[in-house]
Length: 415
Image (cartoon, rainbow, N blue to C red):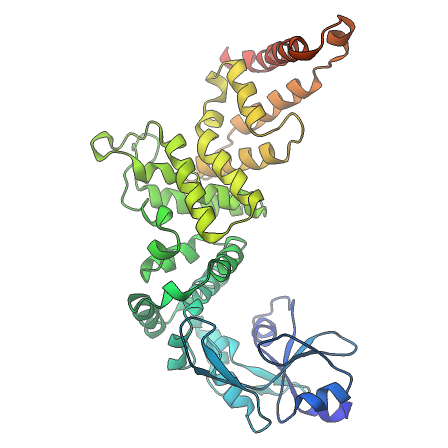
């Protein structure tokens, strides 16, 4: 029976695509044609998944799904009726997939099955939908934007007809049926790509960004002082800063913080433009709103709101009073754990580099703030305890000693 299952099995999707692109293959998914759940169970496969039968191979633990078709039956990405009867062909199964480059299969002998021109689109570097059924699943708007970000450095672009279909889907209101969890899942993956700005710019191009993240969409067209921002447009600066972050760190909390750091600039009174005095505090509420709507994790939310509130302090650290620098360190709980502060200075460095002509900026402020932390942490409580200090008196004395230590680090910067 195992041999029969193998002869009916085809490697599908991303594994085939990435092999043809000469990229590392991370996950291998299989489709089984002409089989029933009982056949797989008798062959030793273990069934998982509630929506439709998916099985784990008894040895490799790779996923095997029965070939299936889908029929639209309701709203959103869950509104489908699946048919996984044994008479469904491999071509039928591939037809329901999103992009032609994801609708290829490979037999166990290595034969490529490519009924919809996926290999040709790989060569042409095109992201093209397989069939009109693409429009039935709103999540695919975000997925295509994510693939555009993932493969941007390989020269991939979205086919004009697919881009037009994505716009039509947005205009129909279908994206309102997406759950926050699924929307964030795609956004999270996009943030981890090499060029995440492409994801957000694609969503903006098709009219979806103001639905998914209106706080970000509102930044486009908002001017900034040319002296500090030659690119002028706040939305474009945010995209440049986000891409700068990808060259500095893989930490998603840092990349998300960069994405959110200037949300407050959309709230600036137009009469005060291009100045944005006070945008730090006004940005916090907008970060909170975005994180609540998308159900972003507490870790990402915390760094994003702190970065929005304090990023200009990092830029001006050499001009700050030592007591103010200590307040920054305390806000990030940096005296107990430096993880958040390390992420914060990376976000600030990305912000500083995300400007026309500044992409190689050294940004010494990051080193200065980290040095201030080291000095504050190095202050020992032992001499204070030996003086008999305790309670509030001990706390006040410790803060004074830390402030003094920070001042000794920052003083040379003012000379």
